[in-house]
Each structure stands twice: as structure tokens, then as C-alpha cells.
Image (cartoon, rainbow, N blue to C red):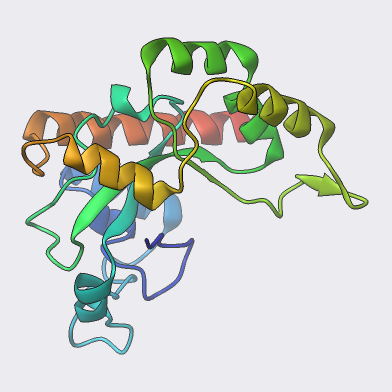
Length: 200
């Protein structure tokens, strides 16, 4: 498993390089004010290159993140291959929860009910260092929500095991172009909504 993180120069296919849609590449560069070649983990001539090691040793790499709790509604074909990004064997999506407040909002009871009713899949990308614990004690709402979640008749495997299971259920490992296009624009919509909420 690998997850590119923040502004690490050795990220693979990160920043604007994640997108095929030109408007989204321009949007990313505008929002983050980055040069097109800032991330270089996939660039053989770069000192940050490690694409060969990734292709050899890493099975799954996280790609786009969304605000949706059930990832199968957005990316039912994960894990998937992308021939345009050959140093990654397979990609997967995740649900983004930046901190404890976003995590708690994501796991609110009605979302848990919907995830269960839909037989969905949720892989949460979060930062446990961001307000999940105060004075050596877990955030009380987080604790309550996780206890509620754990009481359900759900399956809570490690991410790699879940992705292996999803992969075994698919006859193919490509990503349909229409699904990929939808994913890119949904990512942009969720990003703008998050930034709008943060500025409000």
C-alpha cells in the first residue's frame, strides 16, 4: 500500500498529473500554485524517482479522494489499472476526512445507515493527529460514532485485504473512461465545496 502525501516531491503522478481533463489540471495549478513538474516520483531522470520500486513492490496506491461515504457510488471499478500511469500497478479511491470534525460528520448515524443499506465500501483517509485526542482521551463524539459503527454486522478488514476482495470480484481491471471522467469532476466538486466551507 502507498499513499502520496501532501507536498512530498517524490509523490507519483500527483498534483495536476493525476488528471486527464485539462480544465482540472489548470484548476489544480491555480489553486495550489505549483509548477507542472513539481511531483517527480514517476520521472526517471529526477533525483526523486522511485517509480521502478513502486511498480515492483507496491500493489495499491491511493488516488482521488471524495466526500462520499460509499465509494462504490463513485468508483465501482476499483482497484483499477491506468495504462497512462504505468509505474502504479493498481489505484484505489478514498473518502477524505481532514480532521476529527470532518471524520465525525462523515460517520454521522444517517451516513452509517445508508452505507449499510447500500452494501457499500468506505476507505477513510484522515489524520489522527488533528483533534482526535485531547489530554490523552479520544474525542467523545468520535468514540461514540466508532462504537456505534463497531456494533454493526459489518466487515472491517485492512485496506489491502478489502482491495484484494474487490479485485477478485471483477473480471477486468480497467477503468471505464466515462467512470474516470465522472470521478475527476466529482473530485473537483468536492474540493471546491470543502474550500468554500473552510472559508465560510
